[in-house]
Image (cartoon, rainbow, N blue to C red):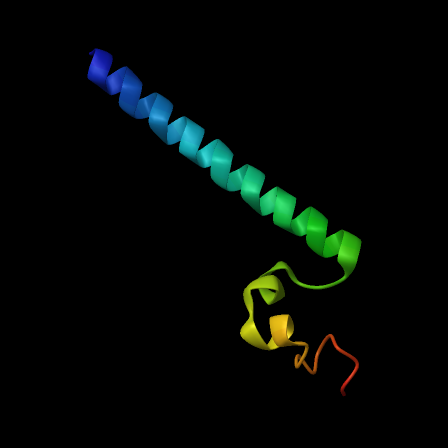
Length: 56
C-alpha cells in the first residue's frame, strides 16, 4: 500500500518536472526567438547556424 503511494507520488512529481521543463524552454524560446533545441546544437554554439546567425 505504501509502496503504491510512493510510486504514484514519484510519477506525479516526474510529470510535473517534465511539464515545467517544457514550459520553461518554451518561455526561453518565446523570449529570445531562437528555438530551445538550438542551444544544444554544435553549429549554434560555434556561431555557424545559418538559421539564426544571419548567414542566410
